[in-house]
Every structure is written in structure tokens, then in C-alpha cells.
Length: 221
Ligand code: AMP
Image (cartoon, rainbow, N blue to C red; front, side, top):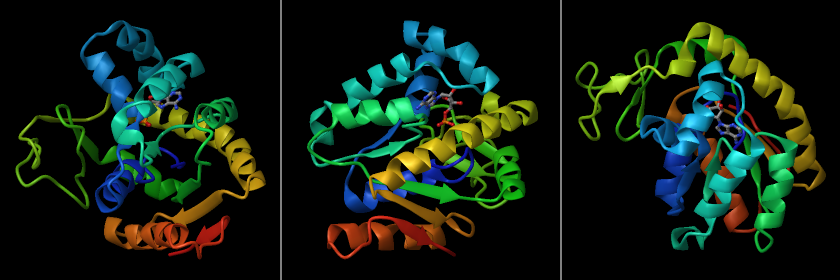
């Protein structure tokens, strides 16, 4: 899944994971866990993440290589936040030769993204995502799913949000071209409720699974 920060990759990835029984792999979640646990990987990635810039391709490729080799990934998987660069996309192609990737980009306009990111809270224990405007937790500051404490991500501070959106804008176009040239790029309007967006996402995925979907295109809301 491609899409700027705040476009709903985590939420839609989770819905895809549940409906199609595929593991969701979020490089951001894996990195945040490593930072929290102060592993060598986390210590290396932390400064970059706090600034809102990308960590090295070597780090994320190491994570992906190891994760997609696990048994539960045999039927397929949903990648959330990876690939972020053409170099990562090329590396993924060589790691996964049996099944070609499909890229699904979630599109949201800028004012809406800033609004969503500023209102976002995440569970520090299970990574569930909440939005104070549209999807607040039942009890303030507490995760509905696991009871863990909700926090604002360090990189959801306004200056860092701006940097992350810049990084995305720079990397997104080459990635779109990369997957379009492989006839494997699809864009979905990710504005509206999570369920509305998932309606568009699942219509596309169902089309792939039944073999009737075009390989490249766009679904507007
Ligand atoms: P996310 O949760 O996907 O927004 O990722 C949070 C941060 O983790 C990003 O701002 C990057 O610093 C880092 N990160 C996550 N995925 C990648 C990736 N594929 N390549 C490089 N850095 C990444």
C-alpha cells in the first residue's frame, strides 16, 4: 500500500488483513516497536524517525526480508509503508519472484491529511489507531482493544508532519511510475469513512481475486 502519512494505510491494511486473512506488515510499526524496546535496530532508526525522514533501505529491507520469509506470509501479505523508494520496490521484486506485487495508493488531499495527523493517537502497546475527531476511544487516553495507553506519535508533531509529507511527495511519483510501468498500479480515493474507503479497496481486491479487475486504474469516491 502506498499513500502519504495519514491516508489510512494502517486502517485499510488492517481491514484487508481481516477480510482476506493476510498478515499486515507495517515497517513503521516494526520500527516503532524496536525503538520502544531499545533494540540495536531501534537505536539506529530512532533519530531518523523522529525527524520524519526515511531510515536506510538496508534497515527496512532487512526487516522485510526476514518477515516475508515467515510461514504466515505464504498465502500473501499486505505491506503497509513499504516500499517507500524505487530502490525498495526493485529489491522487493527480487525477494518475491513468485507473486508479482500490486500497488494500491490511498489518495487524500493535503488539508485533510494535516487534520487527520494532528488528531491521531496510537496505542503504545498494540498500535491500534484512533482519531480524536472521527474515531475517538471509548475512554479518553485508553485503547479500546487492549487497554494500553494512547499516545501521540513523536512524528505527528506539526513540523515533522510537514517533513514527512515532503518526503512522500518526492518519492511517490517515481513509485507510481514504477508500478504503472508494470501495469500494477491502482489508486483509491481515501476520503470519507473508513468503511466507505474499504468498499472501494475491497471492490478492487475482489476484482483481482476473481480475475476481472483491470491491473491499473483509479477508484474515485
Ligand atoms: P509510518 O508508520 O509508515 O509512517 O513510518 C514511520 C517512520 O518509519 C517513517 O517516517 C520512516 O522514518 C520510517 N519508515 C517506515 N517505513 C519505511 C520504509 N519503507 N523506508 C524507510 N523508512 C521507513
